[in-house]
Length: 460
Ligand SMILES: Nc1nc2c(ncn2[C@@H]2O[C@H](COP(=O)(O)OP(=O)(O)OP(=O)(O)O)[C@@H](O)[C@H]2O)c(=O)[nH]1
Ligand SMILES: [K+]
Ligand SMILES: [Mg+2]
Image 1 (spheres, protein in one colour):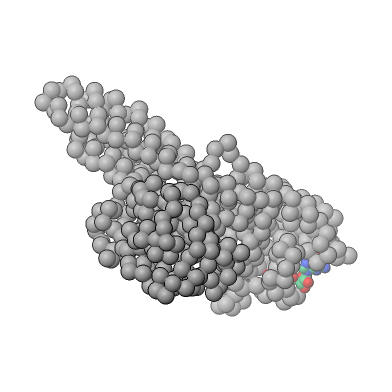
Image 2 (image 1 turned 60 degrees about the vertical axis):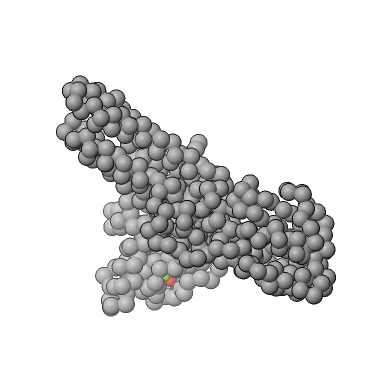
């Protein structure tokens, strides 16, 4: 079977048959082999001699069905569909983790009719196609597996267990209710008063929905927690930006030299500050470029700085007091802090702040002075931005695009509430609902599946 373009979800498969793969990480003492599909039961019988009771671990000797050779002894679990993780018949073999054992058991499985190695993410993909989880849960699961910080783990966990999916479904239910009212209006178009009344009833619901979508879109914490807060180091050439990056990362990441214009490319380092992921970015010194390469470096620097949550403006204190005017950088919604560097230099100006700076620090990147206070403040800033009583709804660009489209349609409809004819109104709301449905995968997502499931590794 192959992917059938343009068909409904139910007929989309990434390849049929029964799949098997190691789903535990490599190198452990125990390896877990998962099998999913119609031949899972026969495969267990072929290797273990019998099918254990559903959902109960049973100790069994595993033999090669070809020649009867004993391969290993391990635990066998049997999960008949549809009450299994993928919705299909599934089995798990927990065997010794040695490479030769795993290879031999997999070889014996793949020699059976109908069994083949699983593609990356194929178990999760089958779970989605069989309605065991929605697309946002699958994404949450991918994020959970990839989570590096405590903040990422918490957010991914909420999503894996349906946080966004439930909200979107609730939005969609309310939209359908509003649509039903307007469609009722269409049916009664003969009787003059009904349409106007039905539409009036739907309006507060659509207004409330739009406000909720806009609030979710305004909340940027999701991307910040998942991708990490972006902290850009900016300043004029030779201020000590690369030295600061190296000092904060405690690694020799960037080239430092007394030559102005040393850094040309954008350099990024990921840090875990108090359980929050922070991406620290070193950029080219900002000035009138002297050559094509430097000009390109400065262009890239400005582009990345524009995306930052926090900009650290590094100032060379050995060269005099910090600028009185706010440095010219474009970073919408970002905080701008002053980091006066080279505190150790004999000519360094006495520590002082600046009117435009949200916070000011005096440091010596070279000798590590004052860096603890800076690190602590950045950690506190990120923690503050990530805080909220509730998890943010929208995590990925994909979610934002859907929510923005839905909000756009609702806004369009509300702007013309008293003028748009019933069919057009119903159509706008229907399209808004479709945009929301794409988030959970309830509607038209064939084109998205490869993108979403590509993130997984084999066995997941
Ligand atoms: N004394 C002193 N020198 C420093 C300090 N930090 C950096 N420097 C020196 O300043 C010079 C420039 O440092 P870099 O880190 O390359 O500066 P930069 O801002 O990245 O420079 P560009 O990439 O060219 O824009 C080097 O000679 C560093 O050794 C400091 O805290 N104290
Ligand atoms: K330099
Ligand atoms: Mg540099």
